[in-house]
Image 1 (cartoon, one colour):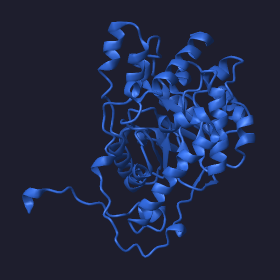
Image 2 (cartoon, helix red, strand yellow; image 1 turned 180 degrees about the horizontal axis):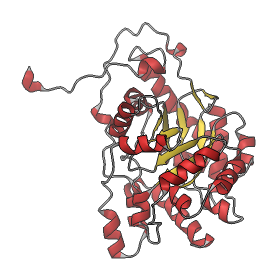
Image 3 (cartoon, helix red, strand yellow; image 1 turned 180 degrees about the vertical axis):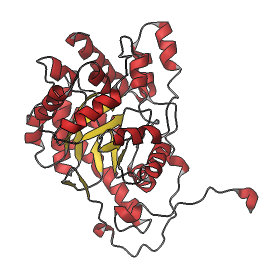
Image 4 (cartoon, helix red, strand yellow; image 1 turned 90 degrees about the vertical axis):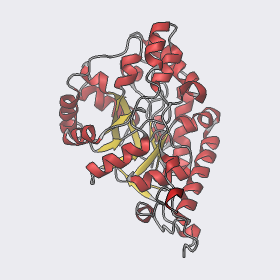
Length: 349
């Protein structure tokens, strides 16, 4: 696939994701079904609640990650700069979109060391796809991706459904685990395995951890559906019908977090996929996530400027803090154990 073709595809992705009606999964992420037990007497000072976290040895002011967004379009240069500036102000982590174009051409799309200059203190995560590992990427490309932005870790994104329904998508996924294992042994920074919106099962999560992956981003269904995005992109009615059938495919985010946490109790987990606000973030932490990621929800703000991104996340952070307060949780460890109400059944009254 040529540089121009990839860039056009990435630009289409941005346009479609900016319209939730075109890109949203048909799956309910599952957070609405959960209700915290309200604590009417918190015995806390709201301003004293500690929501700090740590990722790859770097402190975070809140357990938040600006998740990977599509990285090929020319306008991604400004988006990346806006996100980096905002993440530094906020003290939260930032994951860049796919670096494939930057690795294979001279078009860096803003994925340079300038990002580290704009965000010197936060965790920065590099990124390319598992399909590229099978196609020949190895230690050299991984190290270049990390060095390009002076990243603290490398995300390997897992998008088999998107590739399967995409015209010209990568259909050979044999050897991903072996490639991950070889890379984990030699790359000097940790690996993060991230789905893109269909979720990671406990079985796959365990195999990824066994292969040397350090962090799992379950990225469950309920947010952006890349099957929906590809259905919107194609002009071929057959291909559109194929992709559209999978807009309801995937493991709901809440279910994925809970299941992976039970199966992998010591794993570092990131929850993304359908996070709308700080209450959803609180629920994700209650289900077992260490960090919470959001991408599409902040894209509008990222197109405006860093101040808009800061304002967006300040709202989410305050919502998370109030959720802690109203569950009587002084910190994230207590929030992870906060009581949930059992489903109400009027027939049992």
